[in-house]
Length: 418
Length: 161
Ligand SMILES: Cc1cc2nc3c(=O)[nH]c(=O)nc-3n(C[C@H](O)[C@H](O)[C@H](O)COP(=O)(O)OP(=O)(O)OC[C@H]3O[C@@H](n4cnc5c(N)ncnc54)[C@H](O)[C@@H]3O)c2cc1C
Ligand code: FES
Image (cartoon, rainbow over all chains, first blue to last red; front, top):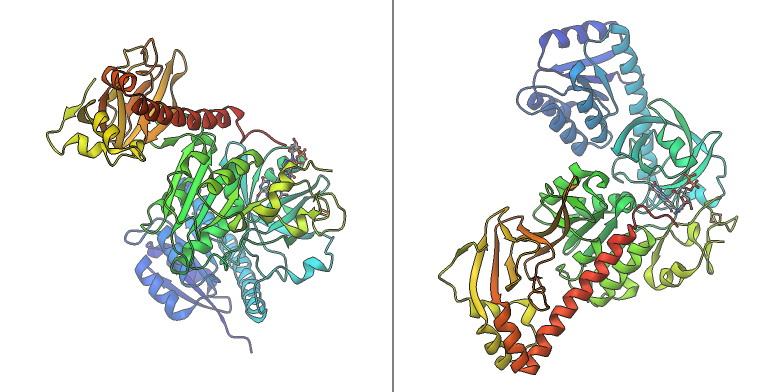
């Protein structure tokens, strides 16, 4: 017999807890309630519930922090946030922090039951994925990638939010059998009836529950992808491409240089660096953006900046009088950055011109080109080294890249696309 | 506009450890330190100089952040670049008509070693070797700034290949 699924509801309003208990009484669940964040966290650690509801507005430990701590303690935890009408923006924030979905108050018994059904379904999938990943020897590139998965797998949009005026993030339900990705890899995202684009995976590699992509609207496909809404379906193939050399970087200084949308493909690497901070020597994160309106992930940047073990600098190309930070192109951060060029590893992504100049500053500092890595963008079609569309010199960027050593990439920068 | 002056430590001694003078010889450094007038502090948002004003000094920033900015009618104030600890602020004192081209404003509490522009020009003319070192350093700052400005003008983030 299947064990009964466990549900935990954390809310400071007793009437909400009572009505949840009443609604679930007829179902085959073990339901537990907690009236505060502290109690909820304790019960979650004790019971490992399959589904957790968290009210965002509570006295004591705030719901958002409860959510974060739940997800940190158990990345397979499936949590739904309960919000008041006035706090939908908080719900979006919660999705960014790993909530599976949100439920606005007041809700009907049917709405609650439906959320429970979907949340528990999600939990089964997440656990299956976690088992598969544990079974796989390494979280390396998707084995199917080489076998030629040309057919996109339909995936549901779990959440969507604006990052800037022209850039959007999508949280996707990972395809069945998804066994994770390595920082630096990308997916081919297919907007049905419109077309396909290579888009880097921009989320935390430890977050198996959803697949994040950050998309800048530049043309037909990206406009259409960015226009998808929660519940819409798109096609996913991947993960493809080479990862950032994080293993190789262990014990070394790591200098991450991101320009514009280039922060998206680097964010998973930053997550990995910070999650395993003691594995690396100095960690420097140098971020450039056109203006404060173009800066991606400002809240996370704030969090990273708050860490004492990271040297993070942000610089804007242009700013108005109210800006308190640096102004100047991102390459100007490199000459005075504190790292040991003799052993440091560089990871650089941005527009090609920016990468060239950033690379030249890093080389000026004495960094060896063999320890400098960039991610190249070329128009792609197949994504698996078959069509030749992405060819640059003797390389197929989709298969040999997109992350390449600068000693290889340097010559390719000059080579026009075919 | 000057900020509050500090009595100690000795600004000439501080000059010797500023990146601007790295590689200078003892004698040149001594000569240059004769041009040091004060060690000056600027509070957040304090204006260091105004565009159009007479450029009398070279500021070697020891710590803090300085914005170079232009106020354009209808556009508000735009920050053109920021300078930080270790940077040299201002080269207009070196070339006629000795007028500042931008406003400079402290973005955070800032400390700078102030060198008298006219005295520096005189020393540089009398001691050609010192003159070479000073002009070379200013030229290097200008070259770096020019390269950064070119990149800024390329507006690489909107450009697509
Ligand atoms: C490995 C890889 C990872 C990528 N990761 C991301 C990402 O995380 N987020 C994101 O927003 N974009 C990313 N891109 C770029 C994205 O694939 C393109 O912007 C997209 O394919 C453009 O398609 P479109 O139909 O919207 O625009 P199109 O109509 O095809 O093109 C619009 C304009 O963009 C230019 N363009 C098209 N494709 C590219 C490209 N690959 N590189 C540079 N310029 C291009 C065109 O020349 C044209 O000027 C990545 C590309 C690669 C190769
Ligand atoms: S996209 Fe087809 S070979 Fe790279």
